[in-house]
Image (cartoon, rainbow, N blue to C red; front, side, top):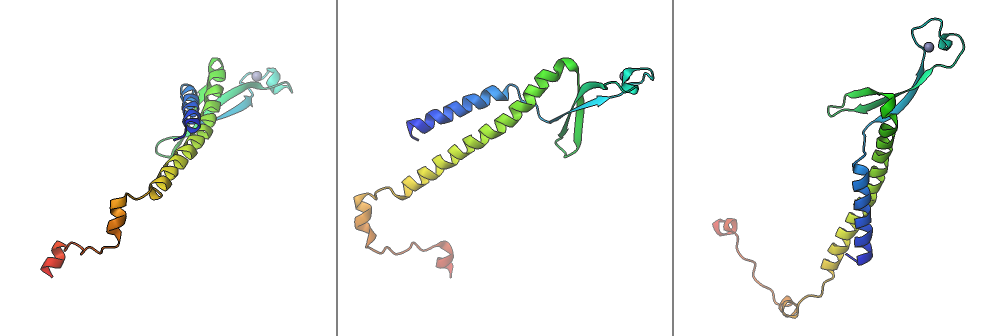
Length: 137
Ligand SMILES: [Zn+2]
C-alpha cells in the first residue's frame, strides 16, 4: 500500500470511530398532535403539540419496532441517526479502498518476475505425479 493510501485509510478509520460512538439505528420521524383537553388551543385552530420524536427501526427478526424519544433526548438521538448515515458513507469509502488494495496486490503477484531457475525449468515437461485413483485404475 502506498503511503498516501495508508494515510487516507487511517483518516477514514478515525472518522468511522468518531461516528461509531454516536450511532443510533432507526428512522426519526416528527409529529404534531392534539391533546386530550377539549378547551386547548390545539382543538380550537391553534398550533398542535410537538414536535414529538419517534424512532422506528427493523429489528433482528425483521419486525418493525420503535420508541418514543423524550424531548431531552431529541438532539442526541438526531445526532446519532445522522452519525449512522455518515458512517455508512465512510464504510463504503473504506470498502472501496480495501477492494483496490486487494486487487492491486493480486495484480502485482500475477506480474511478479519469475525467478530464473523456474524459467529454465519451464520448457521441460515433468510427468504429472500419479494420483492414488490413477494407481488403482
Ligand atoms: Zn392541546
